[in-house]
Image (tube, rainbow, N blue to C red; front, side):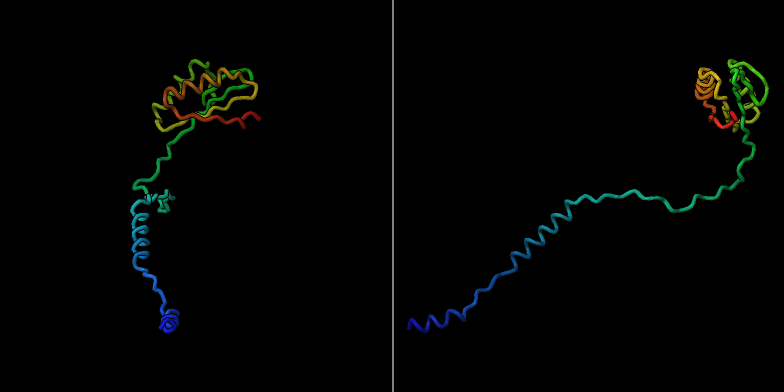
Length: 136
């Protein structure tokens, strides 16, 4: 009898139950989906800006403030002192409020005057920029 039993043992194959392993895989999948943080990436808005209902205003005037090599100051080619530039610019901006100031200093002009004029414009919320190429 012992021989018959030995012959039947190789025919008996063990089966692995896959159900608990699949349960664990699904539980892990659900865990990672729930705990994952979904980052919303910032992208570029590709839509064109809306067209304005009214045409753009063309009365933007540039107020030219020139400073020559002797540190003489000119507002729209009229000579003035550095202390009176803000008054002259304010007078022009009263008539044309969208105007901006363009500082055009010479390379030999005193930097103190340039900084003073720049600070005065910024303190009074007047748009200002500097053009160094005008000193040819």
